Structures are given as structure tokens and as C-alpha cells.
Image (tube, rainbow, N blue to C red):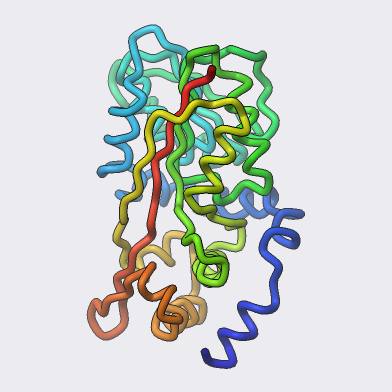
Length: 275
């Protein structure tokens, strides 16, 4: 491991230092790049979104809440199933982008709320389903977020989360999370399968579905979506090139032309029903 990587990995305690200012960082990062997440194909379409809707199977007349809605893609998919949908996000510009995107779809409507996913402003049992897609790695208190999801869903209702998956080995997890946070300072931590199952069962949710899958990304496109400059992209490329064997096996970096690389981000889909 080169000197740069040692400095980068050892200089930050991810779970303590980042959590203190994570929410303000989220608002800064995503407020500045909201439009890019509306047009991002990784968020707008693909297996993860289709599969989430299949597993949740929203019914006409259901009350749905989509948290950290981003570009509004999951909220839109729920609303298309005739669910009455609330799209919620911490960041006002992102919420405005979601509203513009969803409102442009003929015959589709939603309600919008600026909110904190760890302190939801809704009474207990308000919704039939709560979803959150590709966002909890930005949350400083994920267990509290899951408890809030479980609180606002009705008995028998569904909570479904899709997010980045971390490797079970702590050292490898630290490297992968360091790579993510270099690209996006609002990244707090991606958890592993056992940790996520613990969050769900600890909140009183009976897990009925879990699956993991790979998503493939081109480094430059992925980095530029968050406004990374050339120097940061070079550092990201170095982290891929010099990744320890366990991290390289997890991220699977592959050359893509002289300057770019393709790599894998592991994701999971976890769904539970409130007992």
C-alpha cells in the first residue's frame, strides 16, 4: 500500500468524525448536483428499481413513503402502481428536482416533504409501505432510521431498503468505505448483510426477502456526477489500482480505455414486514 493510501485510510474515523456533520454535507453535496441524479441511469432505471417494486408489490390505494427520494425515481414507480405516495428528502433542491421530474409524467402525482429520515414527522402506522433506495450509507444513525421506518408503517406493512453493501471483513470494509467517501464526503458508512439484518430485526421487522447483486460503474462518469475534479478522480483511480487483494476482489476494477476504469459496487435489497 502506497504512502497516499496509508495517509488517506488512517486519517479518518468514519463512524465518529463523519457522523457529526453528515446531514449538512448531504445537503451541500446533493443540493449542488440534484439534476444529475434525476438523469442518472443508475438511479432512474435498471434491475434494482424493478426488483424493489416487484418485492414490495404496492397495491392501489396503499399509502407509500419513499425516503431520501433523490431524483424521485422510486416514488414515481410507487405512484405508477396507484399508491398514494409521499416523496421525502432532506435536501430542498433535490426535492424540487424530484417534484419537477414526477410532475412531468402524465397522470402521476405525489406529495412532497422535506424531512429527516431519522426523525419522521408522521404518526405511528401512517403508511402501508416505506422504501429507501441507495441512500442509507449517508445516514449517521442507521439503526434509528430503521426504527423510524418501522414506527410509521402499519402492522403488517412493509419496509424495504436498497443500498450499498459492505464486505464482512472490517479492514476491507474500511478500504471500500474510504474509496466511497473520497468521491463523496457525505458518505458515512455502508454496512454488511449481518448488520443490516440486525437493524431490521432490532426494529421489530420480520425479514421476508434478502438478495445481493453487483452494479457496474465507469469511474469517471461516477465521479463527475458528484462534481469531482481531475485531482480527485486521479486519487480514486490510484485507490482502485493499488487496492489490497480483498478490496480488489470486492470492487473488481477493470481497465476501460487509457484513462477510465470500470468497477463494481455491491448492493442489497432487504424487505421486512412489521409484526
